[in-house]
Amino acid sequence: MRVDFLDNAHDMQAAVLGQLGFKTEYIAAQTGLSVGQVLYRLNLRGIRRASYRDGSSASAQLVLRLAMTAARTQERNAITASRRAENGRHPRQRQTNGVA
Image 1 (cartoon, one colour):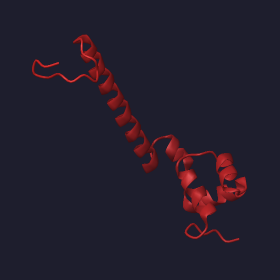
Image 2 (cartoon, rainbow, N blue to C red):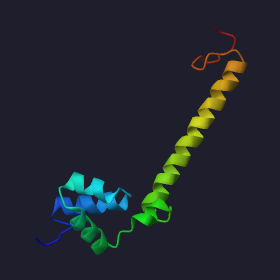
Image 3 (cartoon, rainbow, N blue to C red):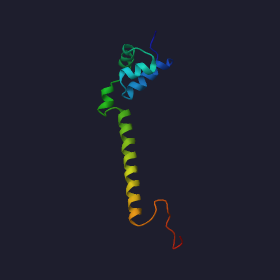
């Protein structure tokens, strides 16, 4: 069987999962391909999972950026809630001009 990343969903799925850094055994289980077939397809595409793990691939950098953004947002929300609690306001209570 010929490898075709455009017309064969299993080949494309193997490439995408490999690019995302998943283990060979996991990719094989998800696609129905053998471990050797997965490794062959990843090699054809020049996909190195080590690039994902060391953070040098575009996919890894995107995931890291999203994770850092989510962490900063969560930290800001915690600080805001803490400040509101110190001021005696419920986190969802809006302050109005003297009207409760």
